[in-house]
Amino acid sequence: MASSGPSVDMAKAQKKAEQVFGILGGGLVSAMIYLGDRLGFYREMQSGEALTSSELAQRMGLHERWVREWLQGQAAAGLIDYKGEGRFSLSPESALVLADENSPLFLAGGFCALPAQMAVLEKLPESFRTGLGLPYDAFGPEGARGVERLLAPWYRTQLVPVALPKLEDVVPKLKAGAKVADIGCGGGIALLEMAKAFPRSDFHGYDISHHALARAEQNKAAAGVSNVTFHDARQEPIDADASFDFISTFDCLHDMAHPETVIAAIRKALKRDGTWIIADIHGQPSFEENLRDNPLASLMYGFSVLCCMSSAMSEPDGAGLGTLGFPEPVARRMVSEAGFTRFKSHDFDNPINAYYEVRP
Ligand SMILES: C[S@@+](CC[C@H](N)C(=O)[O-])C[C@H]1O[C@@H](n2cnc3c(N)ncnc32)[C@H](O)[C@@H]1O
Image (cartoon, rainbow, N blue to C red):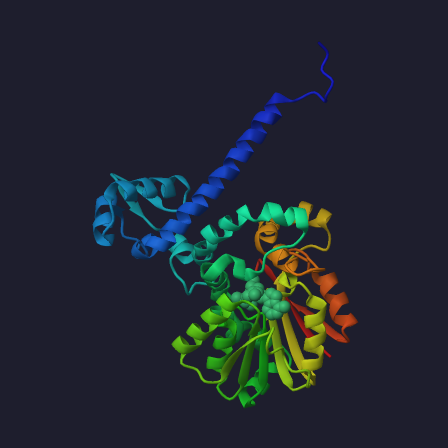
């Protein structure tokens, strides 16, 4: 019988099956990283000492059989080194990515939100039907903690010493005493880093996520600073009184249901000689360019459906920009439509984010 469809190259199909199996493997290794971070394996192995599963289990008060299976899986994934004779160690390079919360390369923290992110999969088929997405609060407190731990290393290591000095006029104003806002502040780490460095300035964080604002208050108490106030942006939006010297929006415009409204509010809140710094995902201008040139595109589209576009579609008529939806040409157009006249791109050596210095 003659086949009616296109002919199938079985060798290519086999490769495709291997590719999909590899993707499943990545998902399961992610789940193991979640356990490694949650149980404290990476921190326990941070010194680089080569340990047997029995030694590690005893130190951590865990069951040896489970520890051995986890260690063997981590070695198979290339995250932990197998040293022979049943001994495993964490290399200094892996420690920077998986164990050291203050390293600029630390990534394991973001995995703490994985169960909460996967749990919303149950709700997303309905979003595909209705169009209405879920706000960040749908991920619960762990969702807010995961975003914070994923993004905090850059704020802790780069924001004050590396990025702020590259902006025109900003550091002298912050030293002398300026009024500052961080919109979409999440757990407030960026604002708290600035507040500690510039005690004469007055800092205001705005967010709509109750879980993020609760973390921000806890983080403020732990930092022991008094020059920071957090606001629920729905109850207390930023004042439209041209009183702010410096405003930041870090990784959040593409998540907003109505970014144009927030951008217009920033224009009204900023002084005539003020500065706004935008950090947003370093995407290409078009889907075709992302497909061709962006090695992180599939990761970003995954984040988008789970979190960013979902949040940006969580109100009726949401703009739905999504993770890759605010590349430089879109940023330039939207800020100029709001009346900003100066726009400068910065490269702060972050593979994920682009930075724009915007002024009235
Ligand atoms: C990816 S998180 C980034 C949080 C923080 N800037 C950071 O870097 O850790 C995006 C944040 O934007 C917030 N957000 C979304 N829409 C908002 C709006 N209209 N106004 C203020 N915050 C908003 C979310 O609640 C979430 O906390």
